[in-house]
Length: 301
Ligand SMILES: [Zn+2]
Image (cartoon, rainbow, N blue to C red; front, side):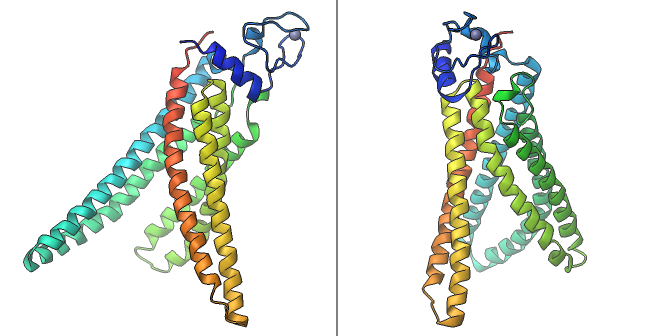
């Protein structure tokens, strides 16, 4: 596999590459050339590439990417199962006799109970893959930390921990709400906090994956990460615009009866939903590509 040519192009364009001997900036020079200042081969300064990174770090990266890949298939499987269940139910309802329909309704109630309890279990399993996956992917590169994305990595890890804490609090409160419905009201605040933190977490993912992809180097994964990040930003803009227009519309209605802002708010919400769905699809490809990319690395040290 010839990655050298590819590597030099990406190295020169995307990452600072100081000479390991004299710190002269080697960006743009091919891998097989030498430092113009001290004649040290450029190859020796490319420690940032994963094939020269600490094998333990690479192993951790692979573990993380592997768990994120499993999670993608779990989510896709779960969604398909849900859709299939709904279609089957709708078909049976459409074709069935009244007696069959009555039986089906009873069955659906049982299924709903199983689904609610199962939902918590599934949620916890998903959360474990999600949290341990991203925790491992955001591990610190032992050497060449100056090429790393330390801020994004830190942002990801801090928001991940806060998110998990509030996730557990919300979960406990929603379980308590089974006995005391008032707990649902109490759960609103931690739910809100975890939603905000979740956005911070999502915004740290793209740039981090991109920085890892550039160390493979793998332009396809980097591209998916950038596109995921772009759609995330677009979705947030749509959400904020929709909320702003909604608030402005409410004020207008109160003062002069400007009902026109309401459709704009719905357009904002619709845009948010569509952009989120695209972002989710990009997220899935990003995780699958990352897994392939980090597993394609052949260690050189
Ligand atoms: Zn040099």
